[in-house]
Image 1 (cartoon, rainbow over the protein chains, first blue to last red):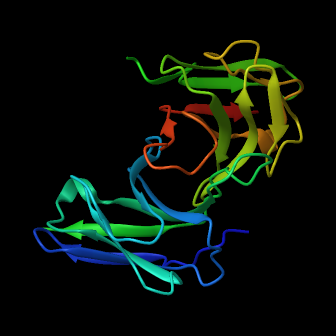
Image 2 (cartoon, chains in turn yellow, red; image 1 turned 180 degrees about the horizontal axis):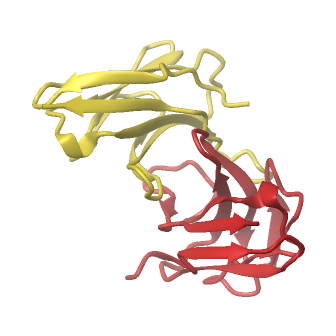
Length: 114
Length: 116
């Protein structure tokens, strides 16, 4: 089972910030939070990941709460091309076994509207 | 770099036929994996490999075989196709299996398989 909980769908107006929440209340100290998105019919695309600190790159920002039990992915100025399913995934940061695999849940379907 | 490539893009099989889905990457990545995605569902891990000569099962391995004789290639074999294997298949690779900074997974464009 996926170790994260996300709302099944969200809408956002074009040009506005899209804030996608994720709950990972059972996260362990050595697990990263990853975000991927999947635009219709394409392979998933990496967005961002973090451990404790907030992270920002050219695509998005990731805000992780101090207790690390939840996080928010922020797309600062959503465009129509950001319409996709967004997956929040926790991934273990150590070698050996299957713990490093990405386990996808059902994600959040973000619809950006004009 | 071509990144992660998959062939074929589309395939139709009859029940009982066998086939191999090809996956290749030119980024010298150690870790490669196969997922399937059914309508309205997230991706489910079939098999993965942490390096040449090493493979292991994921969540849904039944009906599929893999091998990893080179770093670049990770083919997925269906020995006797069943309608339940109708799905979209994605291959992915990353530098390693570790969730370290800079170690994101790159996904291929997918193979759409229909088993009649």
